[in-house]
Image 1 (cartoon, rainbow, N blue to C red):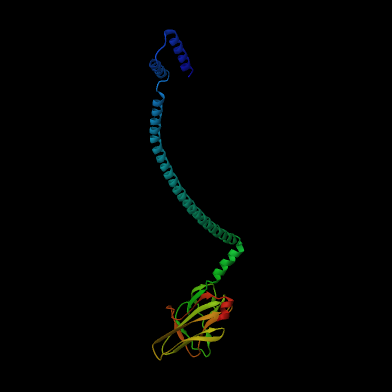
Image 2: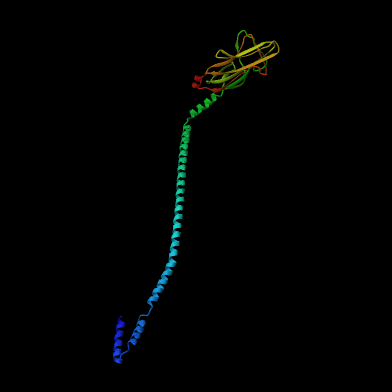
Length: 280
């Protein structure tokens, strides 16, 4: 603006000195000078700036939308991953609780086993020996034949006699006495006994199993000629000290030889407790 004022002053001076210019010449000079001083660059720059801005916005906004869509997809995916991780964590926690419960039960079982082991290890030598003795006491069995050697008749007698079976095959527990022919119960329990008799020559052979002096069962055979034999057996409940033996009836006889034709046998089936006897 200052330059324009100066220019006008110069022109006025020039007109004054040279006799003046016409009005058109002054306007042309002013327009020429104005274009020279203020060239039309501003509008061009503004147009170029507007075009660049439109191109920039055209290029930037699609990228922003794409980035937003990608970010949204990433967030959704991360949420799904977090949900799966939470489910896995809950499953692991459940498995951990189950494992802890199983470990606790195993610990209890081990403690019980250790307790039983300790109780067993605390058994004294005397207790162990007592258990062994008790098992040995339960091993009771015997079997014997009438004659140790030779052959011959036994009987007849005018009274009943106790037969003594001297040829002992088995006598586990030594409860049978081959000298007296009597079995004495060393243990309360159920026992099985069996007797067999043999004779020949037209005789009667009769023998019975006796418990504490009382007749129980009989083995009897009667034949006028040839050979005869009979056998019988019984299960008896015996208290400690009860006796069992075989008694030959009066007026009868039996025959024996190395074939062991007459036998007496017995064995413990199983021991009995006091309460079991009360129920019988």
